[in-house]
Image (tube, rainbow, N blue to C red):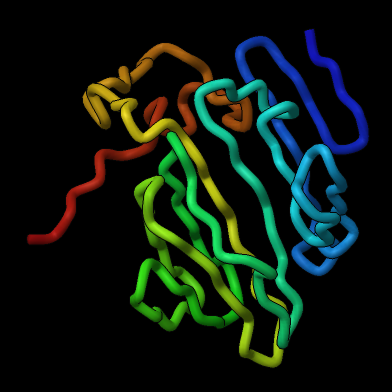
Length: 170
């Protein structure tokens, strides 16, 4: 059974959230008790994605703005992924230039703060999870399903169930 709202879709074994175009992320707002201070351009997704093992947020920081305080965590690692824009990220005493495609993982005890010193908005994703957890299996945890249909294929004769074998050049 599928349950849907304007931005959220819950199906059997999956949950979706539609954040919309990047330019619309400024509409997201948080207020206490969800955040220590009122915040615009940040939206937590755990409650929509039913992801008890991690928290995730979509974020936008306007040009010329900065995080208003340095912070750290008690139990959670964080991964920041810059989707678009440029800025600076301070991890401990180190100052890092960040731009599209930049990832950083921080242990809970590392002080952190960032700013957008560019002329365009800085869009980024934050993933937070318990530092003492571990993922097992990685790619080996996956199982290929040869007989599961792909709904956009017109017939099984179109091509093999999961496309032609791909060879990666050495």
